[in-house]
Amino acid sequence: MRMLGRTSLVLGLACLVQAPAVSAQTTGFETFKWYVGGQAGVMIFETPAQTRGGIFTAGGNLLITAKRTGLLISVEEGIKKDQVSAIVDATAPGGSRQIRFNDTRKYSFSLVAFPLRTIAQPYVGLGVGWLQTVKEYPQGTFATPADRAAAQSSAESAGSLGFGSLLGGLQFRVSRFMLFGQYQLTTAAAGGKLFEGVTHTFTGGLRVSLGDARENTGGASAD
Image 1: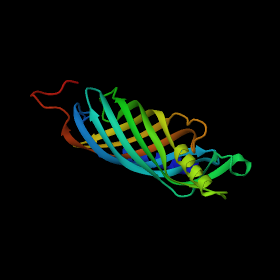
Image 2: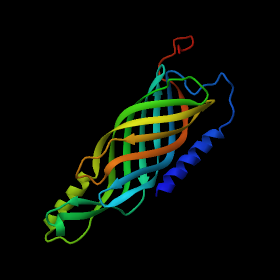
Image 3: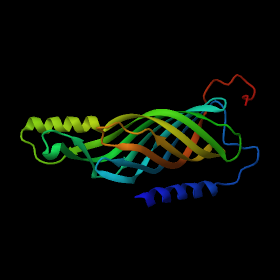
Image 4: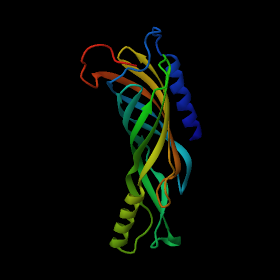
């Protein structure tokens, strides 16, 4: 599982290195623009019943730039079945019930800064978001239908959490397109959740410019 995360990172950086050459006047950042795009990569996480490992993720993103800053909004789906976790359940043997879940979904909102106007342009960001499991399946036996319903409700609640995040990335602009690779670190999940500890996400992708994010009144945008 760890090898999958390292391989995805290496492949993403290799794709960026192979980006087409652009003139020295073309930098990665344009002020007051809308960009929309997609990305794919790997999210690495741990659960109370499963060691740290990675799953494939894919999703979309929206970037709105201002003068050297921007707002980045993204939605990502982690795709893998039969992930294993556990919750506290007094009706289960030993007081712990195994939960299996399929897939994850993450919503992220980040304020990003572009400190350098270079062809290979780094960016950093701070943000918040929401991470959830998509479908939960409590395991084991249940004495009554009410116990089963209570376990299902507890599993759904434990599968959702809010987080803070730190973001870092590198992008190249080619005409109206932006090639990028980035890393996101989230804060650790609280106790009692299906996730445990921090998550790491490595992604690469492409954004395309949709035009100006504000009305153009004439003249070039200030740096």
